[in-house]
Length: 116
Image (tube, rainbow, N blue to C red; front, side, top):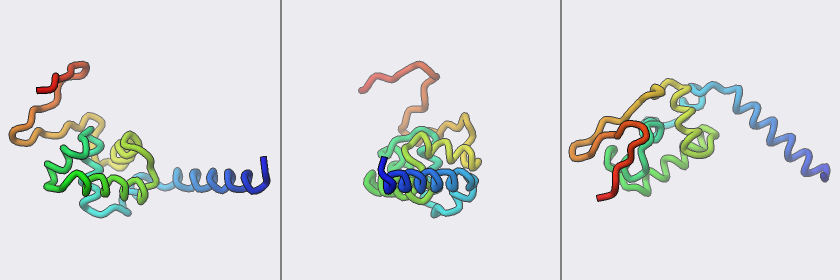
């Protein structure tokens, strides 16, 4: 392995360790109020289109918010976003979004709804 590659890996590792030291609350403190709300909805398992309907945003805007959340909080993927929200106390482990009028509620674990 080249010296430059080794230094790059060491720098990446140090950055990862530093991010791990920050508490979830500190990481969420960087987020705007709308980003917090989107993060909560992501943590409840909703998709971008569902979040958009609930918050009155277009799907592209929700996708932009999720990208900004990942950048600001230093997380990758929706699962890690949900873990962050849970650790910061934004949602409980068993949070379930309330269905919107006209929406069907969640099904018990293991059951799947067939498409209409």
